[in-house]
Amino acid sequence: EVQLVESGGGLVQPGGSLRLSCAASGFTFSDHYMDWVRQAPGKGLEWVGRTRNKANSYTTEYAASVKGRFTISRDDSKNSLYLQMNSLQTEDTAVYFCARGYNSFDCWGQGTLVTVSS
Amino acid sequence: DIQMTQSPSSLSASVGDRVTITCRASQGITNNLAWFQQKPGKAPKSLIYAASRLQSGVPSKFSGSGSGTDFTLIISSLQPEDFATYYCQQYNSYPFTFGPGTKVDIK
Image (tube, rainbow over all chains, first blue to last red; front, side):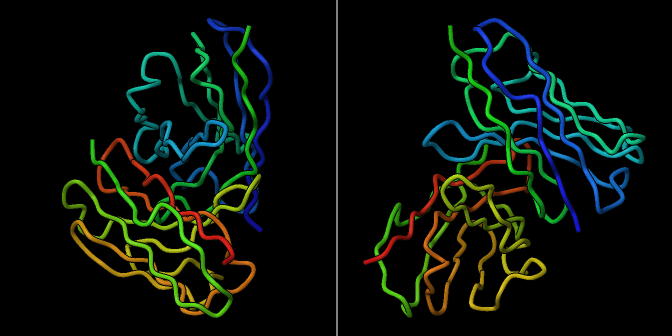
């Protein structure tokens, strides 16, 4: 069974940093593109960014709203995806989901809540 | 960026009803369109990709159609478990973008 489990969310002050993790199981993680999607409280879905697989040089794409502040990385040896978030702003408050980037986003984790507040 | 719009933004329907949700892209996206279902407090669930292909395990009461800029999701016979918010999403070009959602609730 494909499973994605996010962790690392919490409360952080504006200007602070946080690193989210996503543990994958049930599929060959290294073969797949992986994405982060977020959802602010009571709002819709917003794509954050993507990392491609090794065959595509682990290249990344980002939404303009996070480019230069967020970094997506992965460790295929640990079947793990990461989201390093720096210079956090109140508008970054959201549930962050990791998703497998196959046929759009075919599988999602349960999400982890990030709250940016003083 | 490609803007996605959905209509209606919400609808009330009864069990057994046929429900149609439309999605429009601000520019052509061929068939690179997906539909997701989300229930409160839960992760989105993928229903359809490539505009009309059902994800594995998704019941055939869901169907999608369209190409270019105009797309449709149909639920042929609404069941209690289908009351949720539905989002379309384009993955034709970066940044990927979602529609604002259509909330389907009980009449």
